[in-house]
Length: 438
Image 1 (cartoon, rainbow, N blue to C red):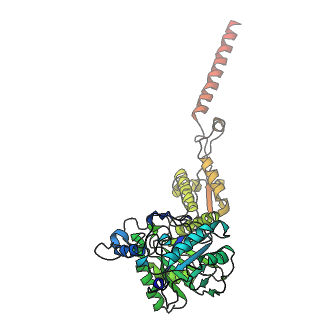
Image 2: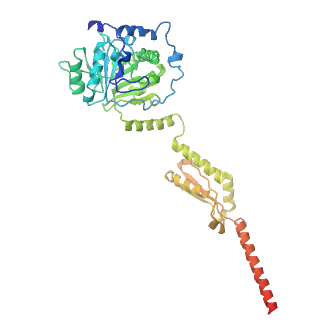
Image 3: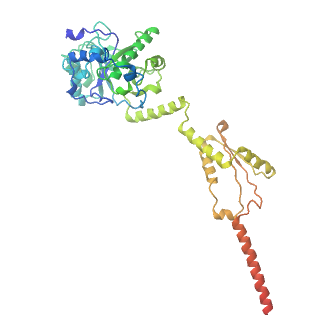
């Protein structure tokens, strides 16, 4: 075991592959088939993905890549309730499938035990590997568990079955080891370059910026950051998970995607210091069900529309309605002229309408635009002009109706009058002929 614990740890880093590891672009809870099993030697061979003559460039795989920020983030985290991080070596030597690597016995055995006992666990559990280095806060073999916020020290491959049984299946403690309580915030950045080059390019840059900002603001001991293995969603790189307690003491695990080094100060200030979600980077949260996820997505969409200065759906509908009303009633000058001409007849009425009744007013106004029926045409025709204004949060409707007899005269009325005249003439002629014959 000593040979497995002699690699340096530069920062607290976690790499996660759910007990059921995810696919190339998404999350799942089933372990990937061991067709791509890596080895210790293969791990070092994969180091060429991050350095050397064939090193990936930022334009191809980094923050300037063509597909960067081209996908929706919210809702991209599958439901799970517990996250287990195993501290083990460093990203440069992790094979693509470290949880199934032949020569990386500890992560392989722990992953297999979790998969075998998955049906007996009360909580859906995800496993991720994070950086470990003896002599530091996170030594090789240490296990961090969230949202429990505890750490077990120096797990070995001999203890895996007992640990899984006592801690993850029975939700008890692993004796005789006493778990340590974790304090502060823990940040994990996917830096699994041998699994996906995008994570290999973006992850280390984000980790370096986090370390720089933590030191700059004196947050050592309060905020810890670590690179971690694949967590699902390579296309969202850089991927970041932040665990910590809110003001109520509840531990949450928020996922962020498309994070750049420039976003690090925002995450530290807004998420960690203020406890506020950075909506534009938010992917999801540990322990959130599908129903809760949908409601959060709706909330984020509404907040995003307000934050970006874009009109919400209600505002867009109201604008369209107002445009239709303005087109129907013409310009406000025409309405004023109409009212002025009939000032003494009380033809103009101003009816303030509360915001809650705006929809009813709009419906009535749309009805007014419909062509009148033949029965209504026979009666005196009234000219109606309406204008809507939303100033001060209220709608104002102006109605002008003072038609003259000439304005109300229609073609049907002309035909009716001619018919009456013709009938009268016909009756007169008939009566005249009758008198002559008599």
